[in-house]
Image (tube, rainbow, N blue to C red):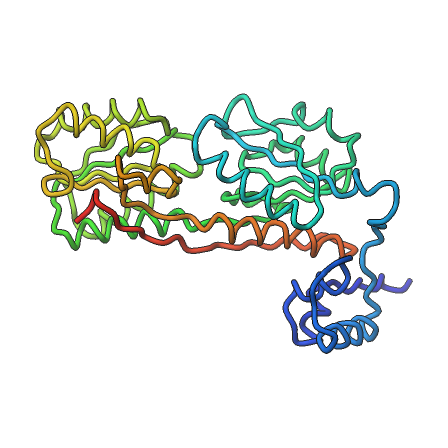
Length: 335
């Protein structure tokens, strides 16, 4: 009995041709921009490897179905997720994909019942910021639907992921507070079961521990403006010596800022520094001018769509994981 021959992938072609995997995708996708010189190199490598792109006829009557991508987002009322959707929609549209928006009722997870009504729509991929259940993953696998975790990594074998390094962002803020010689520090986290909150506040608090900062107060803010405002009040009641607060997202930071501005005599940033996470558009407003960790949403969106394009050209899923560093943006809420 002969061993089944392993099918070549776009990654194999890219390696042999000495080009990026995205160049291989552009070569085989209709309308892809690539020079004649690189195209010849890719085609020659593909010929040697007997590489065959996945057969999807983008000029057929099925184009509207075969280029449909589902985007699953939790907490759609949170200002961050509409900005995520804007970036994803723009890049998907540029690549001639249609978008199906699905929102979850229970936030961090998405179950099989949510996807069932859309299986008949011939989804080619799902980009999800909510964790799928095993049944959800199995349904997608059975229908050959690619799953890409957006700004998450659940370590599910059949999913790829594109994420900002949340843990590193938290560590960056802890290191900054340490350099500023703060000794009484507070942290406002989101939901206890939130992957994002666990990564950001976990990185922050573990780094402070390593730096031997002991006077730390934590409160839950539920990722909302009201939660951040109420948490700030509780923190300052617990410890009036607090001089620095990290909020696990910008929305909570806005509530925290407004409470301190209008309900206390503390000066921001001279007496107390506040730093958020995400860099939503409102963080730049003069009202807040919030120091924060900027997530590279456009880069993350481009990488997610590139994974879909690469998969279209291959005859099998290649699950890959990308971790991208955020950037500390310093504005007027820190010194």
